[in-house]
Figure 1 (spheres, rainbow, N blue to C red):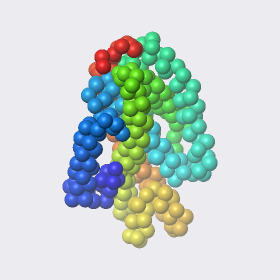
Figure 2: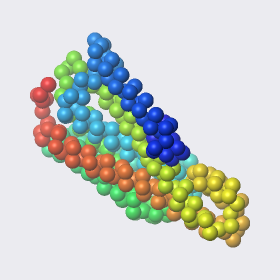
Figure 3: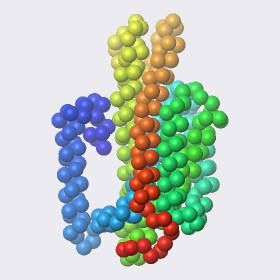
Figure 4: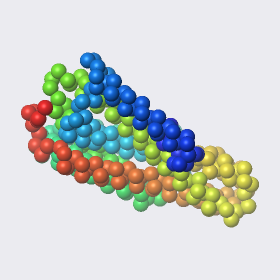
Length: 295
């Protein structure tokens, strides 16, 4: 996570980032080796040998990747560009929770009727579509006609993924291993959410400063102020009131355009990821719900 977050600062080919990634992979390999040879593992890594279990956990991971990444972006988008307060931002995201709560009870029933493969893959496909929609919007698009429908589609898709994917992975393990499977399920949600913030946040931190720097290059703005504005969109928002009135609107437009370009880049990553795992789940998940899957 540290290596991904610091990539915009040091670059992919820096020793800090490469070293961080290598160290993480080594630690992960050691962890897997230890867990695989202990009688009471914290996480039973052997469960990942089962295709249904692995693809189900990946689907959940991707769902939380997109969820946490989107919330991370939306918080800045609503407050810095649309002028919402923290409370208004929270209220503005309520449709997401309402739709997810409404759809979740039906997701498991749909999986029983149409199968894990159809429901989870459809959820991931809808999730990819919702992230694609975000790549097409601007900072001040209609809340009711663009933002709310997009949040509703995303919330419904995550509800379609979460319950059925959890049921699918639990159905692949014997009753004695349900505790271990549940631990993996809980862990993968945290990993997915953390990765979503790290990867999508890193994408924004990579694109936004360059876009804004290009936009501000022709304006007579002190380099220290321009550099501060490039640090983050929230920093830029705090600087705007102190700029000369003659260039304030131009800079505000540049900040808005730059941040939305960065948002689009981050959402393209989520869009592609959800689409790829929709295909994976279609190939690997069972067509029909069954309590007697191969052990």
